[in-house]
Length: 342
Ligand code: TXA
Ligand code: MG
Image 1 (cartoon, helix red, strand yellow):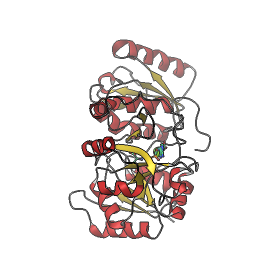
Image 2 (cartoon, protein in one colour):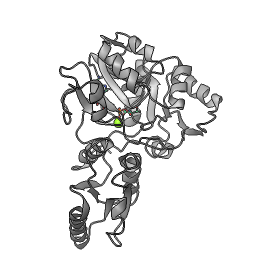
Image 3 (cartoon, protein in one colour):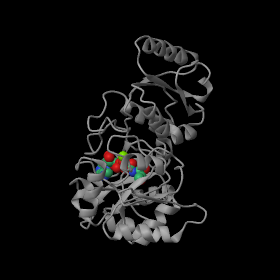
Image 4 (spheres, helix red, strand yellow):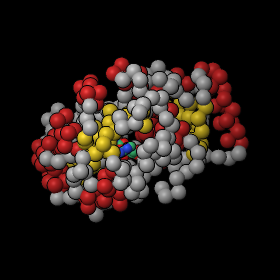
């Protein structure tokens, strides 16, 4: 059966849609909904059978834990324990927003949500639909990104349908997500505190509140769910580092080589380089100095390359600062061997 997708205007959200979606959550079903980062696939975080359906729909390994979403800062105490001042300081500044915090979990959180870990990842999204849905459902909502495991995260309802049509009960379509890459995940149970996943909030911003925050540990062993090859399009991604003329020259060399070898490939280019690659299949990430725009486009462009069935994506690296850290992280994870189960 096809999955219903209800499109709503963000300025006047249809309350019946929220109620319908909340009823599905309460009844143990699955609803995909927009957040400011990417679309999430939600289930009642306190209902283990409902959460199990998330893993089934996404084809996600059970040891990859879910993020729990709340709509009220006070609810943090219901899902997490050992909440110290530093956590509250972070929450004050960054919630609602693209920051996920890992803390010790409360008993009521089922093991399936946390992959058996004694910790929980929690965030309060900065999106009206998400917040209204959580409030109406009267329960925290466990929600990973609403894509098949290993695929680029969805930034539109259409992306969700591409991966999960017929496998979930409902999608609330709130248009494109604003940020386009997932939340930054900070682990506050480790000493020193560390960033598990770069994302919507830059490490520089976090340092203003936690100057001692540990360096980002690539694919940290800390989280059962930190799979290095995540966010992969079907094509192999090849990153070309650098910038300016040198970078464009390297991209051109590779493109000519692949063309000679008969590969079907595409070039993921910055706006300023759009005319440098002649007739090759070029898709634009955004202006190199506008990392916000680049982040917002990233997953869509990767999915569009998949539609063209390219074997290889030659990707121009962007500056690794602010959102650029998250963009490069996702590209590096996409680089390399294809995921088998996609
Ligand atoms: O922006 C986002 O974070 C989106 C939206 C929907 O909120 N969600 C998202 O979820 O990206 P997902 O499932 O794609 O990524 C969740 C990741 C897991 O893969 C795991 O790495 C980490 O969060 N995680 C969850 N629980 C954890 C825990 N207890 N300890 C460490 N890492 C955890
Ligand atoms: Mg995900």
